[in-house]
View 1: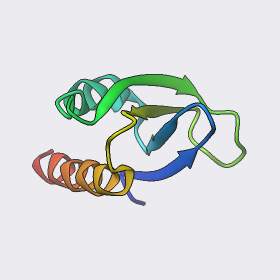
View 2: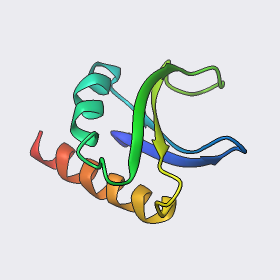
View 3: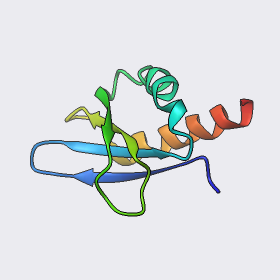
View 4: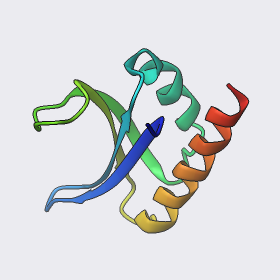
Length: 87
């Protein structure tokens, strides 16, 4: 089982990246870790998931308007791969 997965969500109000962690006890440490991308991220929230077959919680990363969401998702995934390798 993968330690995480991410998906881009676009809505009229904001572009977001949802990050689902297999271990929800890591939500807060990962949130703090990802806040280092402050040049492309407005803010990050821990939210309850309402979708079926998903984790109970996920991180929602709100992307700044001028940021490249695809490049940010790739950078977040690269950072998380490195994070989980160190663990």
